[in-house]
Length: 280
Image 1 (cartoon, rainbow, N blue to C red):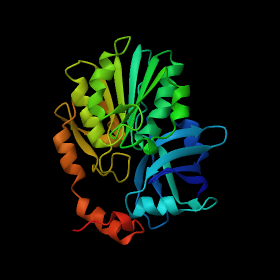
Image 2: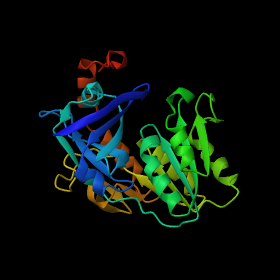
Image 3: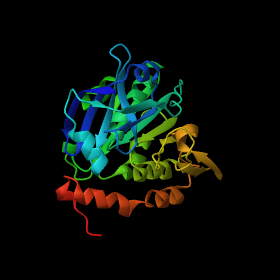
């Protein structure tokens, strides 16, 4: 069992959970993930790691509350234990001296991009971190990201902080950089990953995305997380989660992510997320 030492909503619908998992924390590297269950009969869900403390033996994840399983996790009281924290899973993000690296994070990816930016900075790179959200009240960890970035840029769709608009503003941000951007790393929803890759392709900047397909066991046994990358079938859990965004078949990935949308919405209607009810 893995004790929950912190659980709080940091912005609306986004929860920070810290769990005691010493073996996982000792081996964790940036870009990896864990699979968690809220209770013995619960669903196994993959969650990107936002931070960890090897000495304290804890791992921290950012969870977006969008359905019954994430609602169960968000509702857990500090001090209780969960039955499953499996990891570290997946391959760590490649961390080398690239030069100038732009780290783009949105939604829960604002959290998972943090350890990547930190490691890149420690390696001697110039780190430009870009975070985006619908509005300023949905941005978080700005102070933490400032500490590991040479520059922190915000994009909000309503213009309440930083650039007004969406990830489409990335082109002008890249072109206005004092130094050429040598690599882009994107964490967040599938739409953000795709748009970031589409924008960087004509600029010929290598772009690494952390894919988030449907997943069950996280060890390559079930094959549910298969994706097409460079016209080859890959399993996101063991071959990724990081891939070259310019080689991903985004249309296939987006379609596969919709496979169980109806089944996902049904428990949402019967959970405590009453304000998010959807008509089927």
